[in-house]
Image (tube, helix red, strand yellow):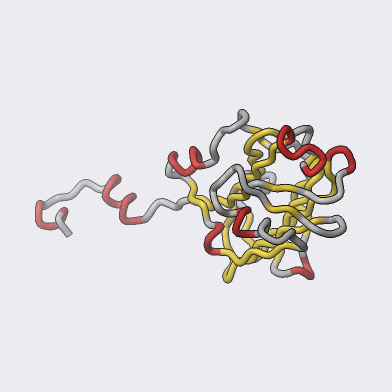
Length: 184
């Protein structure tokens, strides 16, 4: 059981993007849900509005499936949950799984959330802090606070590391010998 890196309530994961070391890649994926109430689906989960949310409508576990068209490097998963607003709809136990498809998913993190309020940053790295490469991520809500049946998640973001371009490295590390050559 791991404890997520919890930021102060309201801390925005876009701060990660501002560092220039990661970028959000959720728009490159195909998202699906195990169930949802009408008007409370993927669109609300991805709309950048903390007032909207996905609401499941079925038996547990409640699943969010995120599939990429090609093998993708993922570093961090960010989930926004708000116990004060959602009470028994708030997840208390979450499993994060990765794999090539639905048939070979393996759990890489299991989280216990105690009345979460804000962004929860979940590292998707191995023991050596190396990011995960995967075709699919599945977030499974295994339990809710107060034994609630359905769940609310307000936002989910997925981040990949930004790799420096070799051109940028070349320009920074090389000393040019002629003006004409340095302009190329």
